[in-house]
Image 1 (cartoon, rainbow, N blue to C red):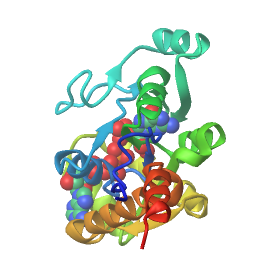
Image 2: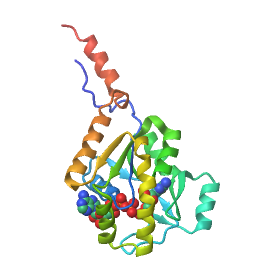
Image 3: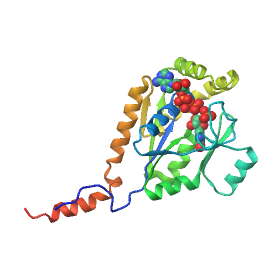
Image 4: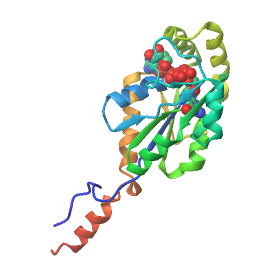
Length: 217
Ligand SMILES: Nc1ncnc2c1ncn2[C@@H]1O[C@H](COP(=O)(O)OP(=O)(O)OP(=O)(O)O)[C@@H](O)[C@H]1O
Ligand SMILES: Nc1nc2c(ncn2[C@@H]2O[C@H](COP(=O)(O)O)[C@@H](O)[C@H]2O)c(=O)[nH]1
């Protein structure tokens, strides 16, 4: 009898889901919803030299470091990618991401376009990238102000950078407009479901199809 395509006997590599957007478009909110919905993603926790916000917890939202520590991690090859964003350094720690991929665990990356470019250069086949857009620039500004986590000068700088970031939308596999959060979240989960069904992410299909073809009718 044919075995079911569970993929359990042969390992598949993990999927790397990259979310990027201009600051305030909502990628952190969507990422948090994805993690909380328990659909099998773990969050990559970045290293940053940015000062910690009041609501943030070390090791949960970021690993906060100073510039000297950051440069030492970078120079030792401990970072999978790194970039300067809005005047601070940000990076993806190498070891947890590489281990997750090798063990077939799916990981979520909230990183900017420079980081996404570097990840694609290194791990193309594993990456699914989504660019999140705000419904308007006015709403982007309003969200940054409503979030009330950054000083006005920081918000101004992020809004100034937003146009340059949006220019990179064509480098992504998918684009989601985050007007209504529920709808945006549904679209992201639909992308995840379809990507997990890709033939090359289902090594269990080999067994299933062998069994199917061996079946006597
Ligand atoms: N669809 C939405 N409608 C209204 N508000 C939203 C929506 N999505 C997110 N927000 C709110 O907008 C603010 C910015 O969202 P969030 O922090 O997720 O943005 P971000 O893209 O991760 O920004 P950053 O790059 O600065 O981390 C938050 O206060 C969040 O609650
Ligand atoms: N290239 C990378 N970019 C990152 C990483 N972690 C976060 N980011 C991006 O930085 C900005 C600002 O984030 P904030 O938390 O200060 O609002 C945003 O675009 C993030 O996606 C990373 O590891 N590498």
